[in-house]
Length: 288
Image 1 (cartoon, rainbow, N blue to C red):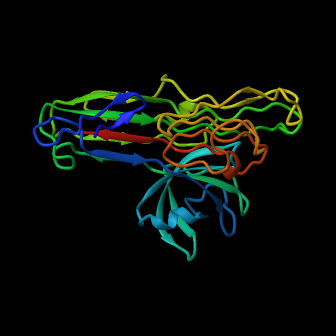
Image 2: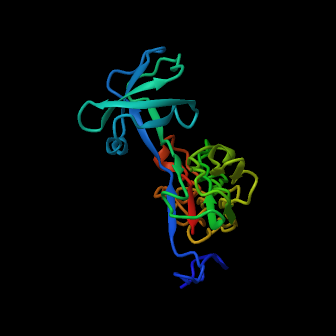
Image 3: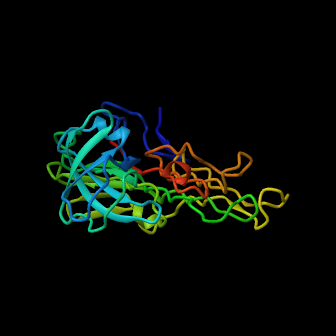
């Protein structure tokens, strides 16, 4: 049975001596919302406590990228988990220069799991010199934040992430692959590029096609001609464009329920919460 990306067959499913791509390695990014807790942060301190339900599943020593005051962002900063304070409260140290800005308690933070993952073709994938693999990589989707109320004005959903596919020859199986998933929720798609680095070869989503977010006309919900353009429907669910507003009748893909790891664009929304308009992180998929 073949493996397909759209109309492109990636596998003959030959197995054994058939030479087909029968296995998949799938790395998905993650972008989550948290807040500064419990006593705020004084500019220049080297440690911070954040409330983030997803971060409790990560081990001490895990590193993250963090932005503050989203969608008008302060950052990025790199942080490393040093412990837990109970519940979802996680302690982090800043790696490098900490913020000079003082942040009040409950200041919103966007926490991005570090997705630079090293994969060795020989030991991790059991590949030999000269082997080939197919890849599909999707960057993170843009957010749909808008200061305009879509009830009486136009709006546009966030664009889905940039995507590309191709074949990579593993000339030396002992040389590592470094995989990076694009982050979701940036205003620019360039903030969410996904990459594969193999020796001197870098494969990036930068400059490749992306999924257009839905567009609403300038007169808001009440007008019959509000749908100027529907959102990109995605490639096997990857890279969908965001809806043009928070109304259920909008044309478009994802709204508040943006899936992580699929590079989906966020819904156009006036709320400042990442959960209302954030885009989904990207992923790197290898077939071998």
